Image (cartoon, rainbow, N blue to C red):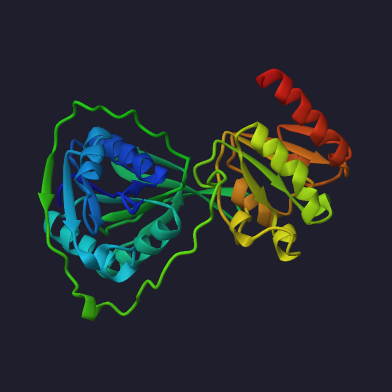
Length: 328
């Protein structure tokens, strides 16, 4: 068993997920403490050499590059099988995977393949008496739990998006790219990708530094107009509570919460959101939370650093005007 760290670099058609570089930076810090090396796993169809070099610039020492038609789109079977083979051969101490939708599928699948443990959605990692301790939220984020994986190696960790800093790339950094072959043939893969339906425009919730969310209090689909205007003014992403999504006022892809997306922006503005625990589970790790609600007893005010009690249809336009004046 080595002191090396493996990390998966997620991308969509060659465009890396922000969580990938956060994961590489986390792997780099762990490897430096253990005295090991970082190996980045870059899988896809073709044209991924630039992505492999990017992984090196962000902190990887070695890149395992596999380009094959079976890896053109993410499917857990070929990706988990390929990573499992690489891990068995190298015997790293830890595998780090960003806790995106794909990462949350790959991490547990890899743990099953390797008969080891997986700690999901980590928000902090520290060594205590030589043991890697992972901190993660539990009970819808009301508590933080310290977790370890005793006696099993490698330890598989998925890291919450934006919970760890993204490293600065070093274009002059040198590393080695090793090409590897896939494990599964197309005939051995039971799932098929038939196509994608992409959202055009807007800022991705997962990568957003600022999120403006609306809830039941906006009153209807038209109530998201001031929410969107404030988001556009701040160059922010638009989010929503489950109540607004269930009412059909806004598509599911905007939902933040326990059954939606988990986010961790620098600034989260909750407009007309009462702050049920299910919603808090998806946004309570935001660095600064601002709540706007006409109910002074709304639970969201207990979580927010700043609160405005008032009619959102008066407060939000006033904020938009003030930000436009300030930002030019």
